[in-house]
Amino acid sequence: MPLIESEEHKALRAAVSALGTKYGRAYYTRTVDEGKPPTELWSEAAKLGYLGVNLPEGYGGGGGGIAELSIVLEELGAAGCPLLLMVVSPAICGTVIARFGTEEQKRAWLPALADGTRTMAFGITEPDAGSNSHRITTTARRDPATGDWLLTGRKVFVSGVDIADATLVVGRTEDARTGRLKPCLFIVPRDTPGFRRHQIDMELSAAEKQFELVLDDVRLPADALVGDEDAGLLQLFAGLNPERIMTAAFAIGMGRFALSRAVEYARERTVWKAPIGSHQAIAHPLAQAHIDLELARLMMQKAAHLYDAGDDVGAGEAANMAKYAAGEACVKAVDQAVHTLGGNGLTREFGLASLITAARVSRIAPVSREMILNYVSHQTLGLPKSY
Image 1 (cartoon, rainbow, N blue to C red):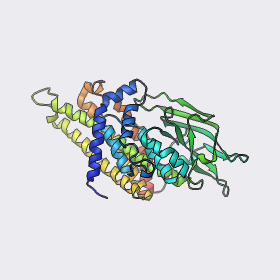
Image 2 (cartoon, one colour; image 1 turned 60 degrees about the horizontal axis):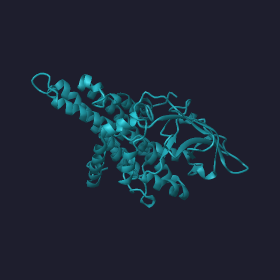
Image 3 (cartoon, one colour; image 1 turned 90 degrees about the vertical axis):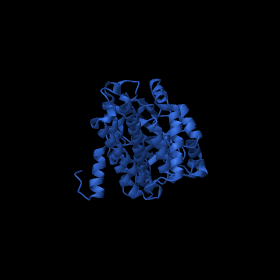
Image 4 (cartoon, rainbow, N blue to C red; image 1 turned 120 degrees about the vertical axis):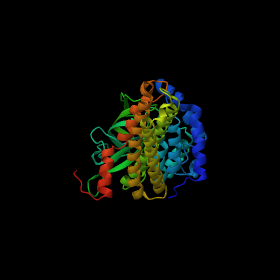
């Protein structure tokens, strides 16, 4: 794994940073206040090839990987314009379809995901399942007369369903040999009969709204199934590792934005004889926040490198660690930034107060820090489970 970014990655980072700066935090905040998605930024990022940078060239993408896509999301976040749907549409759904989809699914979805004309949401969490994916109760059964799938269940905290053209839903089918339920992935178009959504009232300032989904015998054609019916778990984790890596990028970008605002303020704000940034009580916590963010980025880059190299097992450990480190670093950076600005940190002018809630998302979603610690203690350290 290279420790120094390539010239191509540096150029990509600079170009995306320029795009993010062009729009800025004021643009993003305005879209949130107006209750609409950041369509202009999304469209321009797609036109420049950033949204599909990880997708295969043969299907309209850039031919890169999660390493490149994480750079895009991090830099947009550092400019104050984090695009949460990037975690879902090109990273999870695009990756799963590119690796396991049929030729028809690839042609139908990948070019459109790459050029931004179509988006896809991802539904896995359920009211009674939470972090335990083995308790997913959304089930799919075959209609013996037609060969169609009938999907029934509920999902919660699904981002952007209202604007996504379809949702990649994690369901379970019955294994004919054992009778046990096994995970499978289905593409469910937004307007499919029986597929209903209810917006969840969130105290979170974000462009993407959260939804509860109800699937009541949703009839899907046989080709709605993504990949092999017997390889659902492999396909599922092929999407969850990029999700964790991209969540890390989301958190690191957010933390960098908050830190940059705090550093700028600490350089200029003078209460006594010198700017407040000259005092170690202000300077040291900001330096620590910078160190934590840089360390988290290194783990994120390792995870992305392993995933793009095809090492799903190694990527799983690193992706969880990266998500954990980035979430912790982001929360600390935002908290210290707000504290550095004092009362100004809670004003709309500086755009930091809304990050207090948003930063928490990186700690609890898509998997809590406690479950990551469970993963590391069991999978890495070999300690026994209590559950």
